[in-house]
Image (cartoon, rainbow, N blue to C red; front, top):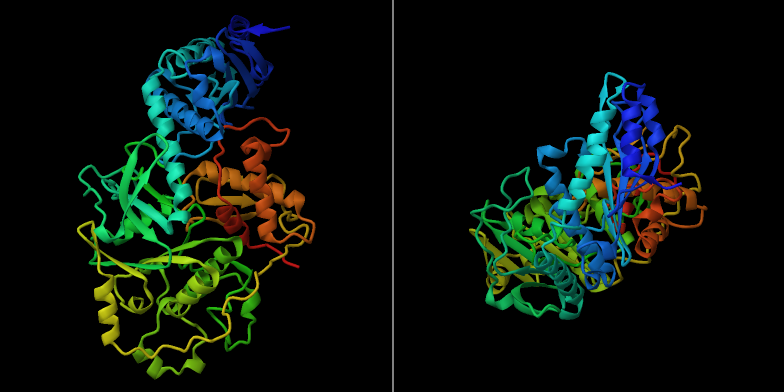
Length: 560
């Protein structure tokens, strides 16, 4: 028997005053005319996480043009447009009790709104009202049978559609992805469009600074892209190889690097970084004192420790600044990257450089760390891995840099020739680079079959905000993963760990296990992570780099 929204209203009126548990009778599907309302989960009490519901509309009944959802990328862009519209409406006080995951500045594939060529599905939460532990049925009826239909009707799915705005949003996203796709063939690792506003409004905000200086490319690095929509974009192309960004304090060096870090994702219009696009596998590397490291091959950077520890399989529960940065870099190489992004401000000095005075005082044989300045060129030549590095206090990288960009009040200029001239005037007693390859065969870390299934695990892994995942009684600290931008990505990574735990067989290495689950998402979407469980609206697609990084930080990880 098909239930209607009127049936739902009558049921809620009848439940008025009953114990809160009676709300569970509401689970099911209700015909609301222009859409179906599906109540998947009802909260157990007023203080539990809110109830989960879905609004499902056949595409022909919506205001979304059929051609707008032709292909996966278009569907992602349309879903993002609708999610921003609906969360904007929910910010109004007239829809108290209804909620949905709010998108950030990045455009990600999400489960809050799922668009296919046949349907649009909106996944929301509802805090069902109560007086103590008694049902407020009439108030709940107002939320579910009055407010919710009004919200749907007012949204861009129906009456509130601005078709030109939708087309602009979709075309910009397709252009951004097309530009990103062209970076490698153009010999670039990143692109920063002219007119971009890179500074943020404050340290704790991701919104653009209204008075920010518009970016302007140096002529030597200027590139122009002709994009599918007919749009032409001009800006600075950051070329493959080694690029050093210099300049005085507060002149925009780190701001430029942060924009490149986030450029692995397209951004929404008005963000200021719409035309900052970076190689999608780029990894930000920094020191991370105290992190757990299990079996990482840091030997190209640190070897011959006085303790005799094998640094080709290095393990510690409390890494120092230099060993943590070496481990972060080694793990980035392990999972695969074409670009390293490094800021001197967040790096361990002894990992990055070793000046002539220190070389004279401490003989090379007594120093187990080979500084990154001696390894950045072999990385480029042996592994074809580029580096963009911010340097404000040392010119040690001038001699190995292919390109040097100076930032002056947020305006870049090409100072490569001058930097090379300066480097030539300083004698450097650098170590001789070995003729043999420094970076050998790919490093494999093979976990035990039960490596992600600890005995103290009673519940599935779950995200706790953006920066942490609880697995068993352990918290995996993700605070320093700069390219993990949304708590919904963290929730998805927690489910990725669950999927990996089911598939570990003692032969797959960590990269293979992570690739298996991220490939599943690529093929079947994020819903593949929930299996037969209720659909979730709080997931966003993570990169394999962050999935791998999360596993690598698990303190109870066991390797064969």
